[in-house]
Image (cartoon, rainbow, N blue to C red; front, top):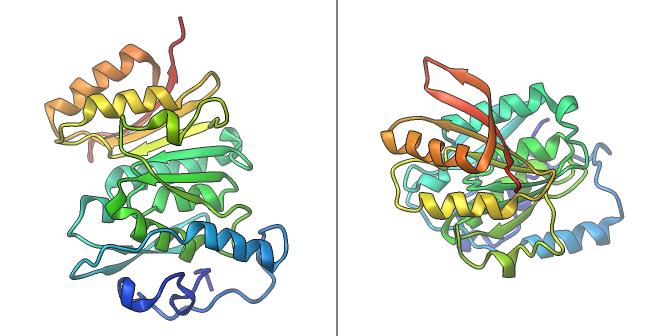
Length: 257
Protein backbone atom coordinates (compact mmCIF):
# COMPACT_ATOMS: atom_id res chain seq x y z
CA UNK A 1 0.00 0.00 0.00
CA UNK A 2 1.65 3.20 -1.17
CA UNK A 3 -0.62 6.09 -0.22
CA UNK A 4 -0.08 7.36 3.32
CA UNK A 5 -3.11 9.41 4.31
CA UNK A 6 -6.54 8.10 3.47
CA UNK A 7 -9.30 10.37 2.22
CA UNK A 8 -11.25 9.32 5.30
CA UNK A 9 -8.62 11.08 7.41
CA UNK A 10 -8.32 14.22 5.32
CA UNK A 11 -7.65 17.29 7.48
CA UNK A 12 -10.81 19.30 6.83
CA UNK A 13 -14.58 18.74 6.71
CA UNK A 14 -15.88 17.25 3.50
CA UNK A 15 -18.37 20.06 3.00
CA UNK A 16 -15.50 22.58 2.86
CA UNK A 17 -13.43 20.88 0.20
CA UNK A 18 -13.45 18.64 -2.85
CA UNK A 19 -14.71 15.10 -2.78
CA UNK A 20 -12.11 12.61 -1.55
CA UNK A 21 -10.31 10.89 -4.41
CA UNK A 22 -10.09 7.36 -3.05
CA UNK A 23 -10.43 5.11 -0.04
CA UNK A 24 -6.86 4.01 0.54
CA UNK A 25 -6.06 3.32 4.17
CA UNK A 26 -3.52 4.92 6.43
CA UNK A 27 -0.36 2.89 7.07
CA UNK A 28 -0.66 1.04 10.34
CA UNK A 29 2.31 -1.29 9.94
CA UNK A 30 4.86 0.82 11.78
CA UNK A 31 6.43 2.26 8.67
CA UNK A 32 6.09 5.85 9.83
CA UNK A 33 9.43 7.60 9.98
CA UNK A 34 8.22 10.75 11.63
CA UNK A 35 10.00 11.25 14.97
CA UNK A 36 8.04 11.90 18.16
CA UNK A 37 4.77 10.71 19.59
CA UNK A 38 1.18 11.12 18.43
CA UNK A 39 0.85 14.47 20.20
CA UNK A 40 3.69 15.89 18.10
CA UNK A 41 2.05 14.57 14.94
CA UNK A 42 -1.28 16.09 15.92
CA UNK A 43 0.43 19.43 16.61
CA UNK A 44 2.09 19.30 13.20
CA UNK A 45 -1.21 18.56 11.54
CA UNK A 46 -2.91 21.45 13.28
CA UNK A 47 -0.15 23.79 12.13
CA UNK A 48 -0.59 22.61 8.56
CA UNK A 49 -4.39 22.64 8.52
CA UNK A 50 -4.67 26.23 7.38
CA UNK A 51 -6.09 26.25 3.88
CA UNK A 52 -9.49 25.24 2.56
CA UNK A 53 -9.32 24.02 -1.05
CA UNK A 54 -10.98 25.96 -3.82
CA UNK A 55 -14.25 24.37 -4.89
CA UNK A 56 -13.49 23.60 -8.50
CA UNK A 57 -16.32 21.95 -10.39
CA UNK A 58 -14.29 18.88 -11.20
CA UNK A 59 -11.22 17.12 -9.87
CA UNK A 60 -9.36 14.18 -11.31
CA UNK A 61 -7.13 11.71 -9.56
CA UNK A 62 -3.79 11.15 -11.26
CA UNK A 63 -1.15 8.58 -10.34
CA UNK A 64 2.61 8.97 -10.46
CA UNK A 65 5.43 6.72 -9.32
CA UNK A 66 8.71 8.00 -7.94
CA UNK A 67 11.12 6.56 -5.39
CA UNK A 68 9.26 3.26 -5.61
CA UNK A 69 6.03 4.80 -4.32
CA UNK A 70 2.68 5.45 -5.90
CA UNK A 71 1.82 9.13 -5.51
CA UNK A 72 -1.82 10.16 -5.84
CA UNK A 73 -2.34 13.75 -6.94
CA UNK A 74 -5.69 15.52 -6.98
CA UNK A 75 -5.74 17.80 -10.02
CA UNK A 76 -8.15 20.17 -11.75
CA UNK A 77 -7.83 21.62 -15.23
CA UNK A 78 -9.66 24.71 -13.97
CA UNK A 79 -6.43 26.15 -12.58
CA UNK A 80 -2.83 26.26 -13.85
CA UNK A 81 -1.83 25.71 -10.23
CA UNK A 82 -3.80 22.50 -9.86
CA UNK A 83 -2.15 20.54 -12.67
CA UNK A 84 1.18 18.71 -12.84
CA UNK A 85 3.22 20.19 -15.71
CA UNK A 86 6.04 18.49 -17.67
CA UNK A 87 8.83 20.37 -15.91
CA UNK A 88 7.72 18.93 -12.58
CA UNK A 89 8.06 15.40 -13.92
CA UNK A 90 11.57 16.14 -15.18
CA UNK A 91 12.61 17.69 -11.87
CA UNK A 92 11.22 14.76 -9.87
CA UNK A 93 13.14 12.32 -12.05
CA UNK A 94 16.33 14.30 -11.54
CA UNK A 95 15.88 14.43 -7.77
CA UNK A 96 15.28 10.69 -7.63
CA UNK A 97 18.26 9.81 -9.80
CA UNK A 98 20.69 12.19 -8.03
CA UNK A 99 19.47 12.06 -4.43
CA UNK A 100 22.82 10.92 -2.98
CA UNK A 101 24.79 13.42 -5.04
CA UNK A 102 22.44 16.22 -3.96
CA UNK A 103 22.55 15.07 -0.33
CA UNK A 104 18.82 15.62 0.05
CA UNK A 105 18.35 13.82 3.36
CA UNK A 106 17.75 16.54 5.92
CA UNK A 107 18.28 19.31 3.36
CA UNK A 108 16.12 22.41 3.70
CA UNK A 109 14.19 22.98 0.50
CA UNK A 110 11.72 25.62 -0.67
CA UNK A 111 9.65 25.07 -3.80
CA UNK A 112 8.43 28.09 -5.73
CA UNK A 113 5.07 27.56 -7.47
CA UNK A 114 4.50 24.12 -6.02
CA UNK A 115 1.09 23.74 -7.71
CA UNK A 116 -0.49 20.40 -6.75
CA UNK A 117 2.71 19.42 -4.96
CA UNK A 118 4.35 16.55 -6.84
CA UNK A 119 7.91 17.93 -6.61
CA UNK A 120 7.57 18.76 -2.92
CA UNK A 121 6.16 15.29 -2.24
CA UNK A 122 9.09 13.58 -3.97
CA UNK A 123 11.60 15.79 -2.15
CA UNK A 124 9.90 14.95 1.16
CA UNK A 125 9.98 11.22 0.43
CA UNK A 126 13.70 11.58 -0.31
CA UNK A 127 14.18 12.93 3.21
CA UNK A 128 14.23 16.70 2.75
CA UNK A 129 12.63 19.33 4.98
CA UNK A 130 10.31 20.98 2.48
CA UNK A 131 8.45 24.27 2.39
CA UNK A 132 5.97 24.28 -0.51
CA UNK A 133 4.75 27.70 -1.67
CA UNK A 134 2.25 29.07 -4.12
CA UNK A 135 -0.56 31.59 -4.53
CA UNK A 136 -3.42 31.57 -2.02
CA UNK A 137 -6.06 30.00 -4.28
CA UNK A 138 -4.15 26.74 -4.79
CA UNK A 139 -2.84 26.21 -1.26
CA UNK A 140 -5.81 24.11 -0.13
CA UNK A 141 -5.32 21.54 -2.87
CA UNK A 142 -1.55 21.65 -2.40
CA UNK A 143 -1.93 21.01 1.33
CA UNK A 144 -4.32 18.12 0.68
CA UNK A 145 -1.96 16.39 -1.74
CA UNK A 146 1.09 16.89 0.47
CA UNK A 147 -0.57 15.43 3.57
CA UNK A 148 -2.14 12.57 1.66
CA UNK A 149 1.21 11.46 0.28
CA UNK A 150 3.63 12.27 3.10
CA UNK A 151 1.89 11.77 6.44
CA UNK A 152 3.29 8.69 8.18
CA UNK A 153 5.83 7.93 5.46
CA UNK A 154 8.33 10.80 5.51
CA UNK A 155 10.82 11.97 8.10
CA UNK A 156 9.53 15.54 7.96
CA UNK A 157 6.03 16.78 7.25
CA UNK A 158 6.26 19.48 4.57
CA UNK A 159 5.18 23.03 5.36
CA UNK A 160 2.76 24.99 3.19
CA UNK A 161 3.19 28.76 2.90
CA UNK A 162 1.74 31.51 0.77
CA UNK A 163 4.23 33.17 -1.55
CA UNK A 164 3.24 35.94 -3.94
CA UNK A 165 6.28 36.61 -6.08
CA UNK A 166 8.04 39.81 -5.14
CA UNK A 167 5.71 40.69 -2.26
CA UNK A 168 6.34 40.58 1.49
CA UNK A 169 9.45 38.47 1.15
CA UNK A 170 11.34 39.82 4.15
CA UNK A 171 8.26 39.55 6.36
CA UNK A 172 7.38 35.98 5.36
CA UNK A 173 10.86 34.62 4.64
CA UNK A 174 13.33 36.63 6.75
CA UNK A 175 16.93 36.02 5.73
CA UNK A 176 18.05 36.32 9.33
CA UNK A 177 16.25 33.13 10.35
CA UNK A 178 15.54 31.16 7.18
CA UNK A 179 18.08 29.46 4.95
CA UNK A 180 17.45 26.97 2.14
CA UNK A 181 19.94 24.47 0.75
CA UNK A 182 17.83 24.20 -2.39
CA UNK A 183 15.21 26.30 -4.11
CA UNK A 184 13.16 24.28 -6.59
CA UNK A 185 11.02 25.57 -9.45
CA UNK A 186 9.30 23.85 -12.37
CA UNK A 187 7.32 25.38 -15.22
CA UNK A 188 7.05 28.69 -13.40
CA UNK A 189 8.03 30.51 -16.59
CA UNK A 190 5.27 30.74 -19.18
CA UNK A 191 3.16 33.48 -20.74
CA UNK A 192 2.44 35.72 -17.77
CA UNK A 193 3.33 39.22 -16.62
CA UNK A 194 5.25 38.48 -13.43
CA UNK A 195 8.58 37.25 -14.74
CA UNK A 196 10.58 40.11 -13.26
CA UNK A 197 8.98 39.49 -9.86
CA UNK A 198 9.71 35.77 -10.23
CA UNK A 199 13.39 36.44 -10.87
CA UNK A 200 13.56 38.87 -7.96
CA UNK A 201 12.02 36.20 -5.73
CA UNK A 202 14.51 33.59 -6.88
CA UNK A 203 17.37 35.98 -6.13
CA UNK A 204 15.97 36.86 -2.70
CA UNK A 205 15.56 33.25 -1.59
CA UNK A 206 19.11 32.27 -2.54
CA UNK A 207 21.94 32.88 -0.10
CA UNK A 208 25.57 31.74 -0.29
CA UNK A 209 25.47 27.97 -0.67
CA UNK A 210 21.90 27.79 -1.94
CA UNK A 211 21.41 25.79 -5.15
CA UNK A 212 18.47 26.64 -7.40
CA UNK A 213 17.13 23.85 -9.60
CA UNK A 214 14.78 25.08 -12.31
CA UNK A 215 13.05 22.84 -14.86
CA UNK A 216 10.91 24.32 -17.60
CA UNK A 217 9.27 23.45 -20.87
CA UNK A 218 10.31 26.20 -23.25
CA UNK A 219 7.33 27.32 -25.30
CA UNK A 220 7.66 31.04 -26.08
CA UNK A 221 10.34 33.58 -26.91
CA UNK A 222 9.67 35.18 -23.52
CA UNK A 223 10.88 31.96 -21.88
CA UNK A 224 14.28 32.40 -23.51
CA UNK A 225 14.30 36.09 -22.61
CA UNK A 226 13.80 35.09 -18.97
CA UNK A 227 16.63 32.58 -19.30
CA UNK A 228 18.95 35.33 -20.54
CA UNK A 229 18.11 37.45 -17.48
CA UNK A 230 18.48 34.41 -15.24
CA UNK A 231 22.01 33.85 -16.55
CA UNK A 232 22.92 37.44 -15.75
CA UNK A 233 22.40 36.88 -12.02
CA UNK A 234 23.01 33.13 -11.65
CA UNK A 235 26.00 31.02 -12.62
CA UNK A 236 24.01 28.63 -14.76
CA UNK A 237 24.60 24.99 -15.68
CA UNK A 238 22.37 23.00 -18.02
CA UNK A 239 21.90 19.69 -16.19
CA UNK A 240 19.50 17.93 -18.55
CA UNK A 241 17.63 18.61 -21.75
CA UNK A 242 14.98 16.87 -23.82
CA UNK A 243 15.02 17.99 -27.45
CA UNK A 244 11.76 16.18 -28.09
CA UNK A 245 9.77 17.84 -25.32
CA UNK A 246 11.74 21.14 -25.13
CA UNK A 247 12.26 20.66 -21.38
CA UNK A 248 15.47 22.03 -19.90
CA UNK A 249 16.75 21.63 -16.35
CA UNK A 250 19.16 24.22 -15.00
CA UNK A 251 21.26 24.57 -11.89
CA UNK A 252 21.73 28.14 -10.72
CA UNK A 253 24.13 29.56 -8.14
CA UNK A 254 23.59 33.22 -7.37
CA UNK A 255 26.48 35.44 -8.43
CA UNK A 256 28.04 37.42 -5.60
CA UNK A 257 30.11 40.55 -6.03
